[in-house]
View 1: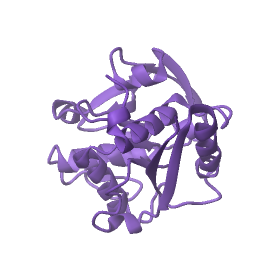
View 2: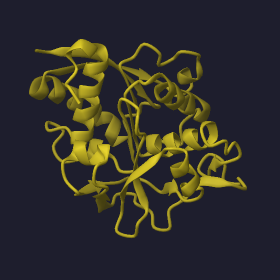
View 3: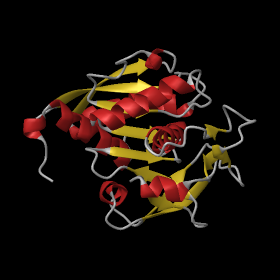
Length: 240
């Protein structure tokens, strides 16, 4: 059976962002290999500012490509997916903004900022990494019993990055309010986040779009597609 679902691709589409150029190939592979047809719509970050911009979609995927033209638009898309139970995947910049949105709107840390967008911020939640991960590949250890582990199917994975910023401060506060950091690098730095109790909310600092052959989508992308299909046809959803 082929399930068709709609997905909002949030980001400022560019032929110079490799992850963006891979999306059509990944969508084609999902349809051919897994029977998961995603009707995808690109929503520029400025358009995402509009009320209800991602409402009605079966999934929201915030793609790499920061700094986005509109931080507010990306945060609005993340918030809508989080509050309305829409399956969500955030990768690289999407991960950073998912953490930022949670800190501001759930934890009440209204003064935190993203240093790439606000380099003079007094309380940067997302700061330059001690060692840039632009063009790097590194191992990620995944917490047992997490959504990430069930999706990736292993306690350890090696992933590709193109990133120079990540979360550093207030991590205990984020955890206390329900955000789970389910993947870390060899130095214990956060690389994956998820939201228990949400139908599907997963974010990674690495870019699964860059993984291997685009004809074989990364398990996180396949899982988002399946979550979108289940959202579109809840009666056909796989049992937990």
